[in-house]
Length: 293
Image 1 (cartoon, rainbow, N blue to C red):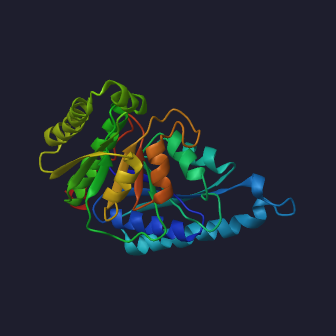
Image 2 (cartoon, helix red, strand yellow; image 1 turned 180 degrees about the vertical axis):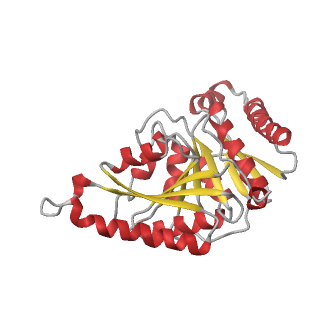
């Protein structure tokens, strides 16, 4: 069964990078691809009708589809033009998808600015955000581990990607001493640093153990650091293939319900960022070799 990908395009450089990313992915996975774009009716000048701009959107999708058929001929591709609010339309498009892929750092268009944060907070499947300057790498797959259940699906996704690519999985957990507790050290003179660090080390060990059980062939490197999770993940992902994080997936309020770590990563974009909501259906990692059997 093919992995179903919805790729949202708007004609900018980020869209081209996202298309490149999907074509590269199709070299190792059987893919069924929907190329979609959104005509934002609310942003059209009153003197321009949707029927007037429709041919330009359709041509953009056709050009992308032709590129896929040329460079990834095994991919089943279809196109769709959606009309309405981009956030709502893209969330609807991803309801039955295994992956939603978008580009970012656009000069203009409906996928510019904070919309990617809103999509990440509300999407029902893993969301891949591809930076404009993306190029294939041979780096590791980096995943951030939180101290609650929100990272379970992210770790599962990242381990599957590391296995597919034959790459190292870098499992990263950042922690901090709570501010009020730190102030207590000054007054009481006692430091619980070692106990707190040990508790966080157990969180990290639990994630690594799950990977070892479910993906025994994956090489795992674990990292436990004290400091800002977003900064530590950004540094770890500087040369990575992708960085994967979880989210609470409880709504669409930028930054708050998305989570500050995912929010900050979507600003820094050291590499493609994958935001995985809890209990999201994992992509079906079927290689092109297996589909011929």
